[in-house]
Image (tube, rainbow, N blue to C red; front, side):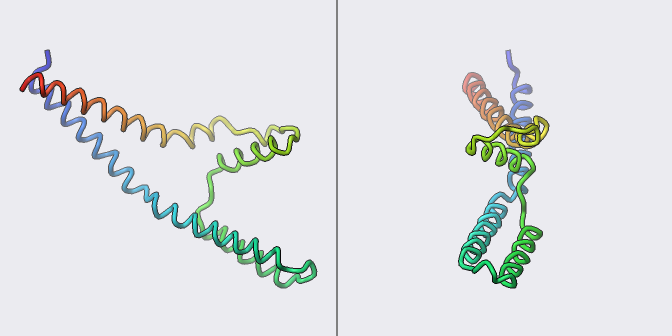
Length: 142
């Protein structure tokens, strides 16, 4: 049988888990990162469009675009190594070429990439289950 003190303890633990999860999500600033990456993508598209309009012998404009691209790469958030490995692997599969060891996704990079996301979902699901459990126990004792 669950005592009222144990019920309060579960409630407190659930509240702390939800608080920590909320703080993690709040400090992740996903919206800001998403906006920066969208802006970066639009700038890259603009550079690509300008590059297609340039004649092959216009070296000065090509250098200027290259310098601008280098500046963008240095100042914007880049992808994780996992994303580059996955991109190489998908490109090789699309081209039908032979896969090399460097094209394959590293298992540790996969774990490093998915661990925070998986942890977030596990904590969310666990918090929901605990909340539902406590709700039914509260109804039983009421």
